[in-house]
Length: 190
Image (cartoon, rainbow, N blue to C red; front, side, top):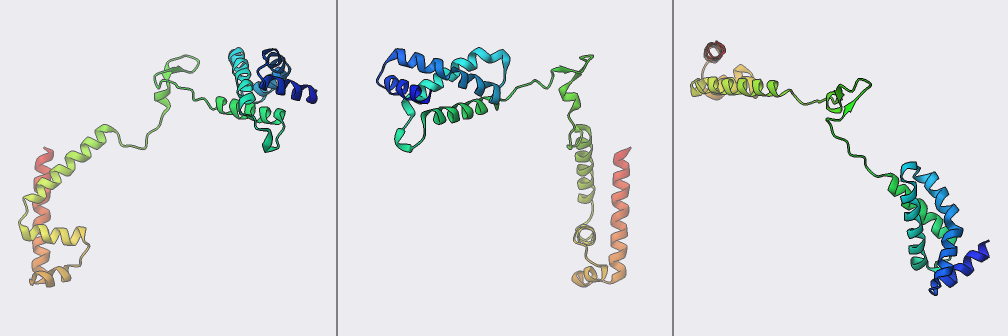
């Protein structure tokens, strides 16, 4: 059989259409087994078979004897890669497609999100805006002490040293600033 394939190959490459037909017919079992093995889709069988035939005809033109491979091995590998690639075809589904036995749920209902809810994001944004507005109501010295203590994590004695004021004054300014912030933020909540 292998010798017959080689003869059909040589005649087909010379342009003999009858040899091409006979070669396709003799390689049809290889095409069918490749479909079953690598891309088994019964509802697309005829299309896959026709595509395999076209690929075999393309192999007639692209086959290079000087590479030391047999034609059947070359065709077999080309069919395998073609059908494996074809099998990777992505299926597109709508997130609104009904699923389940009752058909009442949609795919989108089953998706989990690590993102915040829109309402939570809005509340966080508004709260941040109110805190910023409240901080802007503080004096420059109050803002600096609150920022240095809470954001930068500086100790009160270090802040007192930098501002050249007493430890107790820093504590009083910080407490006054916190009281002002609390008062403003509570007023905003009402």
